[in-house]
Image 1: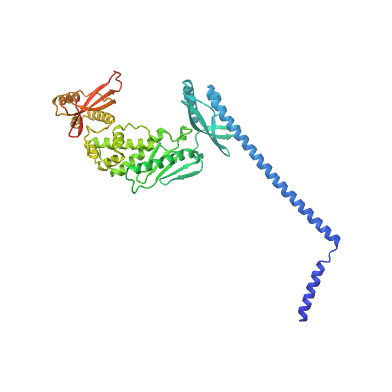
Image 2: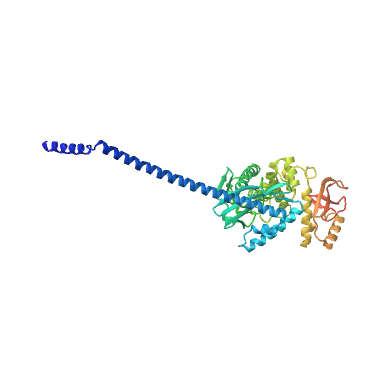
Length: 455
């Protein structure tokens, strides 16, 4: 116990010894601590201030470069507008001779369009993206009073920004948009285009699958790619994966980059895929069966886009008898089907059906020219009502004459009664290059449920 007591006393004396500092020494020690603390704070503040100044300076420099870029773009457009080739080429990268040649050609093209009043170079900058020493700028130009956007790329050198060829590696970060029916993969440049593609194709898939059987089909996947060889192509048609080229490779509508031409292409591909799935992927299809299939595809594409496809007969069939008749027609379609299938589907005589036969007549005349050029006599004669001797003689004479193929535009096609009382299709057509008023009348007789030429 005494030993423990002594150890505690020694420790107490040691503690007491440390607290024996005088008042003046304590004040000096506190003052020294305060000085070091103040110096530390001042040093930290100086470092923070320095960093802020450096950041501000860097931002000022970036703003200066951004302003210089916009000034460069506006000056380049001004050179185009006034037709100053020398000034325009001064903004181009002289390190790329091929690019310089292409820009000379572009200058001439712009000059021609401006001379015709077809284009207005506004110089409006729609967006700017700068990444260190490279930049891309979306520039507006109005064509036929409609806004279009063109993507220009620049590199920063010692004397400022130079216009360079497109840089596909500078298309932005990978992005994705999804809906219940569609997945769209794209990069930053194509944000607006991708959004419109997603909305449109989601709607189209809903419409198409509301008419045709889409059971078992996966979600449609779209890859929007800058460096693509074609405007649109199936990467994996079976699994509904399509690749679409970015519209900014060339020029795009500023407000609707997914516009009519691109919509027609993509909607046609999708419509064909849905029709193929519904018909069981028919092969070796020709004649009337080919016409019915292709017309159904065109009509479905028109249903998607609301752009006229010219599929007048199928459109009138759907309008007058319902979309379900198109689905039924395709379900019954075989590689050897003919036009009598239409009567089977609507359960109504063709001559009494309220159908618009204009595109059918155009297709039939085109088929006739094709078979005549190929000298496929039996198939060609099968298009005629050869039971009528006059028609048969006329057909042989026309085949022997072997006239050059012609393209026809059908003005109207009406069903009426032939002199013998039978149903007859009377088509008024205009041959390409024939400027005679009134056109030519071509007759078709209904023979065993098929329209056969009778004039």
